[in-house]
Structure formats: C-alpha cells, structure tokens
Length: 235
Image (cartoon, rainbow, N blue to C red):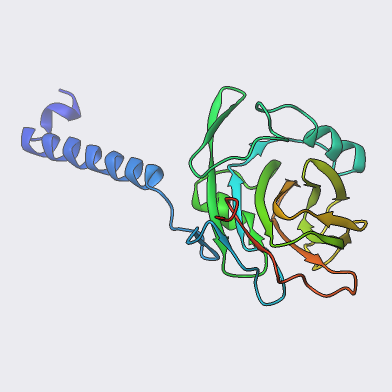
C-alpha cells in the first residue's frame, strides 16, 4: 500500500489548499506593484520654476531599454544613436505615452524629483524594471520668458549620458562615473523665447544611476527666470 493511501482524505485536501494558497501568495507578491520611488513624485504642475539652485526637477522618463555596451565615447554614441522607436530624437512625449522596443511596450512617466537630481535607480526599481545594462531617455520642456544668450547646460550623470537642446547635441559624459554637479558644461548657447526641448540619454552598466541638470548664465550663476516640466507653459 502506498503512503498516499494511508493519509486521511481530509489532510490531502488541506495540503492541496495550503499549497495553492502559498502559490497564489507568491504570485501576488511577485506581481504586486512596488512602492513608489521615495525621491520621486507624480508631476504636480506641467511647468514649474527650477529648484533653489536652478536644477530642473520636472521630467518625462521612459522606462529603461536593455542595452549592453562599453561606456566609452564610441560605445555610448552607438547606443544612443540606435533607432529604438520612431522619432526618438524629435517627438515630445506625454505622460502615459507608449512606445514599442524590440517587441515590448514601455511607457513614458511624468515625474518630479524632491531632490536636485533624478534617481533613475529608484524610478526603475519602483516599476519592477531592470536597473543595470540599461538606457534611459529623459525629456523636459524649458520655458523661457525671453531669449537668453550665453547660457550653458550644466549636467552630471551616473553613468554616461548625451544631451540635446532643441534637437542639437550639446554635451556628453562618458565612462563609468558618479553623478557630480556641473560635471559637464556645454558651450555657450541661446535659449529661445518660449519652449525649449531638452533631451537626455543616460546609459548605466550597473549599480546606482541618476542625473542632474541646470542652466548657468554668462556669469556662472543658475538661471532661475525659466520654468521647466512636461509641457510648454500656457500663454
């Protein structure tokens, strides 16, 4: 006689029920959304003044795209110049917009950072997305009440990043690095009156990942007369 035949039917039913409950609980824990990123919030305003030190706090961030490439100049440039989705260097996304990359649909999210920097590790982890060997796209609209000449885009990133202002590539940081305020500063450029689109591609190999950005005027002071966020400012 097998051991199974010596077990009372009621105990078999109980064991099966407990096993099913355990599987359901494990599945629920795996599929449940993670807690919101502690340093990021949902966007509260389509365009707002920069932080006290001029850092842009409102951004549209695309869920990470898996990539694996050296963080050298050529490796990063190859990654960011690869066409992953249509109009990736020209379209102005909106919160909730979706794109399809390699057969997988991913989403743009409008966020505000409570700090000077945008913590991409927190962003991805909260969504249950990978944080290593990834590419993040970030976009913001800087609204200027007047034309401002002679400004510089000052950025920091962990790890490498490439930046565009109104469709023109203006600066890049390469190699595995920590995010440092004003680690890279562009040549002098002009913010046009009205909306200006700032676009960034951040490539991370592993560990923490974040970025920060602000504009400095001709004297090296933060530009505070602008607003920035996910939409052009209302007229």
